[in-house]
Length: 193
Image 1 (spheres, rainbow, N blue to C red):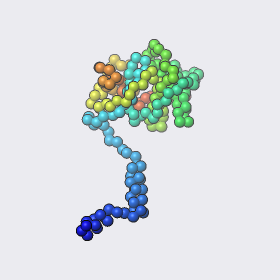
Image 2: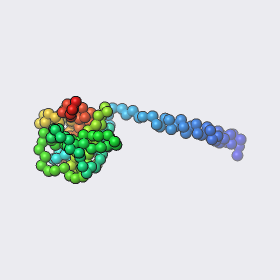
Image 3: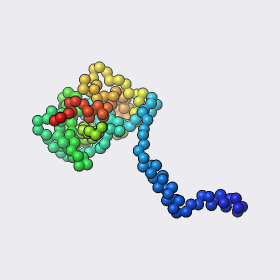
Image 4: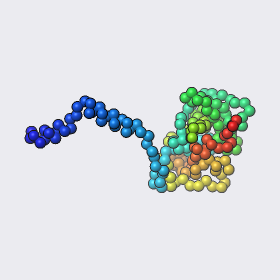
């Protein structure tokens, strides 16, 4: 082999300390948090879809901290009807609400047992949402989210980002896309404060 090729190949061989130094620098870089830009008209968001009563809802994964299947929810006396009780999630106690009652609708069927609970978190606060049925994660284009019509009740309008088609669930099926931050900070959920 010519000398210039050999010297070029030697340039790629590193001693063990240099290799370790490069790997540590890469690890530090990869460990830094990623800052995501705001969605543009062509971007998509990932939402988890679920059913509460007769309505379908969507929630961006950014606000979802956990999904739990619970056998029992500890009842809290003297709380609003929409507060089902408490569950323990990673050592923290989380209140669980029923969106059907919270939005002022009448529940026509009991929650399934065991119950799926979506833990929504924003700005250091969390709330659990009991759901009747949990669907898969869907991709949602920002341009597909339309404003909430005036026919939707006031509490839903205060918490919703909009309505979006969810064709993976069914033809012409739509979901009310919830704003996780607006939900956990809603004045009706400030129990005991």
